Length: 239
Image (cartoon, rainbow, N blue to C red):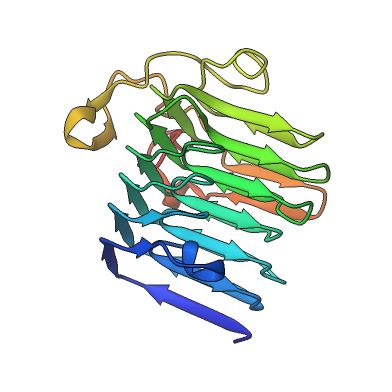
């Protein structure tokens, strides 16, 4: 299809364990399509023996959009929650928690030079295993992470084969990212992380610490008016 939209679903118990394409995308496999749009969905306890425990975008020719989704306890060797294989993506206002992988990317794995991604207002918290939450593995991949929170992951970002990740206005403790580009390393002070409440307590330094406008060339990644957020600026993270 030229465009595919999935809106408002709860996807759980997906089990992609077949041969070829049937080993990828425990919840959703989008393959060789123009664009995809996944919004307002929860993916919980899905599995893929290949790539993309919850979602696998495979050779998307336009853009894979994921907006306002929750990824909880998904697993795959490549991309515990989301795998983008030669597929550009825009991921906005999503939660990743309890996701895991055994080879690359406990939450998101971008591979193939066409897999540049824009990640805005996301929270990556308490993801499992020894891998980074986001792994970019190919020259030509350029990821931007804006207004997001990384907390209690083994590591936040891994880059191989010349891939690039730019992080701005985000919370991270990873060396090379914290303390630059308006990033901070303060405790995000979630309300109740053990029970998946990742709202920010009133005293959190992530409140009003994001940016209302972020552009890359002619491309606007973040645009928020005063009516869109409380306080002087948007908060970091999902909420």
